[in-house]
Length: 472
Image (tube, rainbow, N blue to C red):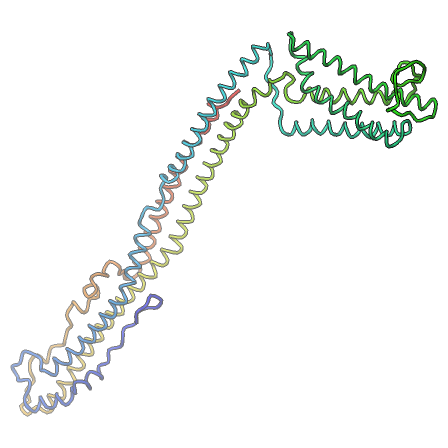
């Protein structure tokens, strides 16, 4: 039977079958009647030799069959031994991965450091040129969303308030149109003026550009106050006359109750509230836009690249630290998994294959001795019948000796020399497996120790990296 899924079974030696094949009993009687073998014979008779030849042929056929079965078993054992004995754990693999990440990170950090220092010089030059004694303000995305949201909220609230206060005075349709228009002037226009004009008007020390911006701000403030006062006057006229006023029909001229000449109108509380809300919302929108980014024009923009480099440096250090942690965690996990597979799977399989070889050796020894006993039994049968029919009553001397099979047949280690190293009698298989298991654990423990020692060096490198790139 050839196969790796079941143990090898030798066929049983059938002495009776061989006696029938060679007709041993008849040949014994015939030889005896003829005085064969003679008294001085040293060699076995032809019948005895044939019985021995048949027995050895049976044993040889079983040896061949066993060798065919052992072929894939030995190959499997060799593969397992090679797999188990080869180096499984090496810090070199972790070192290669870490060095690759370190090299990439170092290249990025060196490049960004150069960019950072260049941009830092530009910021310092800008500071000195404009005599600024502080660092620039860099607006984050969250802050930008908040400030823009404030402008939109102010526009919405003022549009609603203006419409409520003007609807009765100039009509709902006209009130809606003018409330949104005024809200756009007060809020949206103020935001634009605050961002592009007010920053320069406040921060530029002198020059024609500052004078121009100051003039624009003066005109802007005058127009905003005037428009809101006119709206307040419209509300005051309505409250006094209870007649709706058409904004499109307003004109400057003599007389009283002219909204365009708001100082001629008798104001009341609601008209004051309407004017106050408009001016207040314009002021809030102006300040909100002024504070968007750095209040000094261009100061925040010039520092943007510097901050991007600073952020990229920090992210790169954080990423390399995280990547290295993953590398070491992976190596530890992979080492534990490999050890578990080797001890719980491969060593168990190897033990089973060694057991099969050892079992075959033991069964072969039993078979060889059973063949030896069978041969002696056939000899006794032949000699007993031969002696009974001999007329001379002679008993050849060699009949007194028992047949002993050659050591080459009796010892399986000699009959299967290529498998000698795979035979472990008694409890030596378990001792062999325990020894290999101990070696594996020792190698794995050494790997873990070396890996932890190497990690300490890498952690120290990361600390030094953080100190080096701790940019102010």
